[in-house]
Length: 156
Image (cartoon, rainbow, N blue to C red; front, side, top):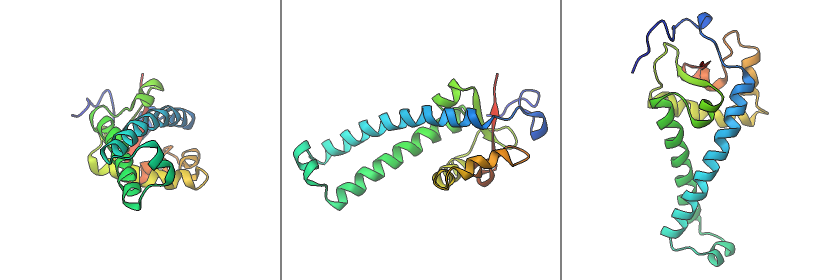
């Protein structure tokens, strides 16, 4: 799905870019949504493995821990991937009126989604430097934007 050039021009200088505070607000909103999904996924994985409260408190086997971790990572990838490849907006991004798209204004590919998600934890882990980078970059790009060749824009 492509957007008309008059609506989303490819030139970064003519597109209203999203401010850092909007990005951070959307991230907080989406964190709560993903956390809720992780609770459901955790319950489903634990139930499927036949692990009850008492057994969980005694400690999970390493295989069970990895299965739980894999389920949570997969659910987060699917959450962001579905929204970003279809509308370019997660629920948090919709609330804060921002959108992620390729540099040419088209929706992200799954490759770009995976690139953004691979870099995002490091961008946050470095005291948020990967996102503070928006303040010094001429096109207000964060590390995930740079790696995935995408941009976050403000929508009306």
